[in-house]
Amino acid sequence: MTTYHAPHFDPTVDEIETLKQLEMGKILTVPHAIKEHVSARLLEWGHIARSPSGQLSITPSGRQLIRRQDN
Image 1: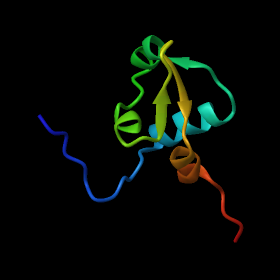
Image 2: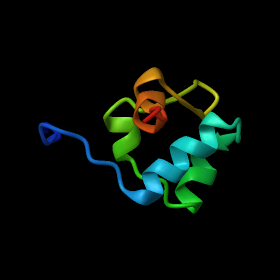
Image 3: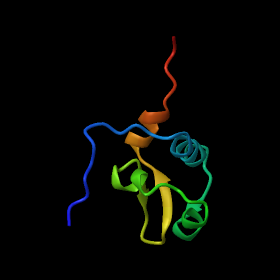
Image 4: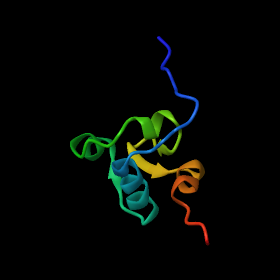
């Protein structure tokens, strides 16, 4: 079964907060992510990655989502 992906990823406020927490070095494991209801979309879209030990980390595409731009 193939997972549908919209042409563009629009992160929710909670997804942005999760990415920011990972960017700041918060350790997040799969069991903790389930308990915290972390969106699986972040993993599906490649904005976070899971290590063999189950630890989640932010990817370059995840960093790009939260990168601050100078105005």
